[in-house]
Length: 320
Image (tube, rainbow, N blue to C red; front, side, top):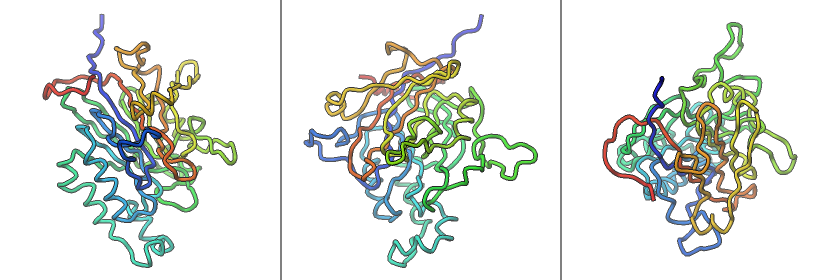
């Protein structure tokens, strides 16, 4: 009889699409996105850190993450973070005109996120690919990250919809994915800037689902515990997806509770009333903070979930 793998309850705080906007003052009781950000083991930022990729914009959000009460803060870029896509920024001289005709050095931007100051603050900037991380509570989890999304108004980190960026290529494929998503049970958490097709990806003005079809296809193989993203501001929310029945349940949260707690909170750990079944279910979260009109509109998400347990490094915990 096989023994159930050991897990440890871990708290994850998720934000995306901050577009240079720091949390509102603590005494602003009209919005959930205010100081301080909720305490967590891990803080995830799913891209669109900035509006136009200025170094000063990155520095604003760096200070937000530096001050956050989390052991680890993982961040990826989004399509607005044009100076983190070096190939794109070198090619698109039109975007340099946004910066007054003077190009910004992408290496200075990378140094901000990957330098010693970032490491001291627990900030980890990830590009596309898979990483395995160990936390002080003993959790060891594998995360797949990607800043890419289908081409959108000639912004950064884009690919054509016909290009399958997330699945192993067929022998005769014209495009071969450099970092295809592994199959279940390899990935615990997935963080992409763009959403999968049909999941929290509907744009307001066209009532159209604009997420990536190939990402959705990869998710059917991967079945992570949690997949978070942003990009489509107006589609903020959360769903619980059952893979065998291919059905989704919208996760409802109280507006009053969100403002009080400074977050939308869900518990799918063994302590919760409905624990997540890894391999059978995935929690999807669109964590865009801004509205479609670029005003602060949405709450951070906080998810309690069970992650694989290796061994404790310290006795610290974020459990209430």
